[in-house]
Length: 308
Image (cartoon, rainbow, N blue to C red; front, side, top):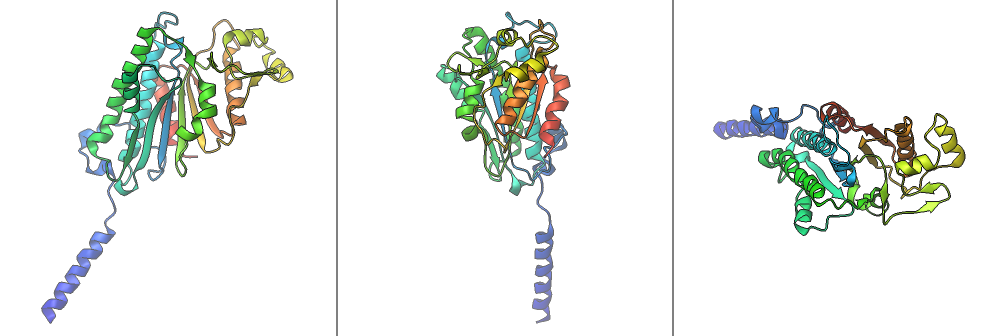
């Protein structure tokens, strides 16, 4: 009887010890060299479920012949921004407890390329991790896969020289809610663009409000002087809201590249974008010019890491 009692007490203590042992984060079970390969910043509290979408503007802005930049070509900057996003996402997943992992990362273009093979590669970038598939190798493969395939996407677009524009306004109107917003998640849309909005199939004008704006439009509207803000307000110039109810979406716009002929261009562009996002219900956003990736990395990491 004493023997069974001792065994029972021992078994009870073992079970209690197992019960109290906290679940380990993925990073805890990785070797140091694997964790070191990931950015140090975490995306807010580790338990937050992230849903990050990246939208690529593949208009002629990425053409190194039309818009050369001796410091770094604009498409190379985009690739650097994408790397910062994917590595921050990886790090977020690695620092969550395995049972809490439920995070998504995906990439979008609008219009989609006509090349079926390229479209298949783009779809292969749709990434989702949960407690059942969050293995070390698959997590750390995310940035490597994105680096490789997004480079192919950009280089193919440049080689084809078929720049039909990027339908940013149309994407917000018809797709952003269904593709970029998940209930119960922290939803972030990263838009890589020069800041101008134009597509040949989405041209709507309502008095002085439009679904597009280009450097020519800004000059035509007289928003190229020190009195641009007064003229903009009096004429009610701006973008037509594409949709409403985007209060559960955060937006990070990267790569703004204002026309150098107008010293006020950047301010006008930020005003257009800011008013537009607010009108659609976006509560948190940032709009940044085309910095070098080394300088943009901190901005990206901080935006994704701050949990409002």
